[in-house]
Length: 136
Image (cartoon, rainbow, N blue to C red; front, side, top):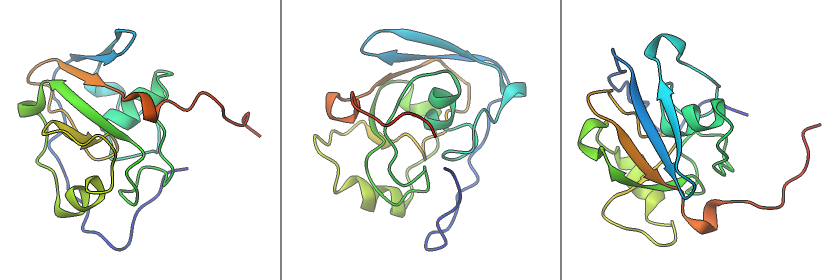
């Protein structure tokens, strides 16, 4: 899907300059992120956790296509939160409608790790869509 949301100011977060690792829980899938390979997809901010996850076969629901217009890509940053961009007002507003909000909650489409350390992300159970249509 992908695209932009004309109603919010797009942040330009700092992209990584060296490789780092993202671990997705549950399951523990580890992805080595090479900054020279970014972007992987068109969903979410370039270098975002959503964009990286989808580019490596890790499913994260994202009803709005990753343009910060819903809260379906809500994830929890277990480790590495200090190495990510600050949440925008638009992201914080969308998070207000996310179930199971925690102090470490972010929208996967908006959070961009800068590569200064490894990141561990939990995809909450309500975000894992076990029934989806096949690609047309």
